[in-house]
Length: 357
Ligand SMILES: NC(=O)c1ccc[n+]([C@@H]2O[C@H](COP(=O)([O-])OP(=O)(O)OC[C@H]3O[C@@H](n4cnc5c(N)ncnc54)[C@H](OP(=O)(O)O)[C@@H]3O)[C@@H](O)[C@H]2O)c1
Image 1 (cartoon, rainbow, N blue to C red):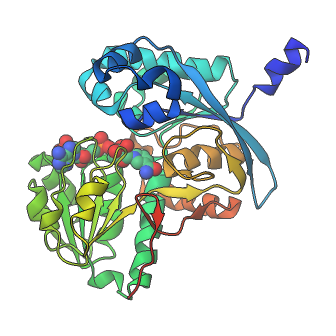
Image 2 (cartoon, rainbow, N blue to C red):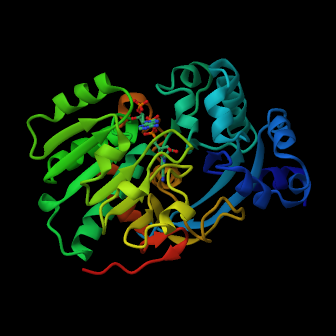
């Protein structure tokens, strides 16, 4: 094939920038080179790896317009703990190089930042200055999917939302804050949990007029013990939820990437359920041609937001900084439904689970 045609074939509509969620996933994705090396050496190597294309995403097309889009998975190859412990200047510089790679080499018209990457430049200030490509974080659609999942599970267990007690661990974060706003109008009790008490108080004040009884606490175990449903949405890769404090029958939606509750820990309580939250099935026959921890054809809601915007040809920085709002959550939810993005059947650590009353 002539070189020019080959280059053209590599052009994409959108790109999702991902980072490995843990060392195990990293070695599963890049089998050969890394498996035999010590963890500390692998971690050191990651600092030197330039941005690269993991794969081309194919098979996504809208159920509404039949529009087909092609995407790319781009690697920002640092682990969560490395992102948390490196300097912002280093991380921003690496991120700018990665986004430029997607923009210049693959001609991506919109770029999504997944998992911990939005934290690097929360308001998008540095990225906006250095780049002129729309960037989104997927947070609006992630909230939409959490909302949908909780409405669906309440139906399945035969409970009215207003009778439920919901705890949000990471309530003051980008996702947690909008979830708090949405559920404060719908549920009976809302427990808001984070480490910074002042931010919790500020958030609770903005919710004062709504329906739910609001309780704030910086103690995770205290905050979850009465809850029927717990949403974890924190920026810590560590296990911060002690499941022994959950009440029998409690259901946890672990939105955090990486997760806040390990399978081993969840299995120590047979009477609770930890759901793999924030996962959707894009329309068409999606193939990611790369393993990032989910069964074939599924993706995280944050990735799906970039796809929805590409299908709509809305090349704008949709979920950056203050752009995460209830209004946008509703809008992107409708657009996702229109194009055929679907909530998956409930799964727990990759296995489908049946929910009964
Ligand atoms: N499934 C999906 O599609 C999807 C999409 C996007 C993001 N995510 C994941 O969702 C999570 C949240 O993202 P975000 O952008 O909302 O993060 P964020 O804005 O940085 O918020 C993080 C929240 O966690 C709290 N927190 C951190 N450590 C804590 C601890 N030890 N105990 C209690 N609270 C703690 C923070 O408050 P304090 O600092 O005051 O404690 C804050 O409220 C991340 O893990 C991200 O990867 C998932």
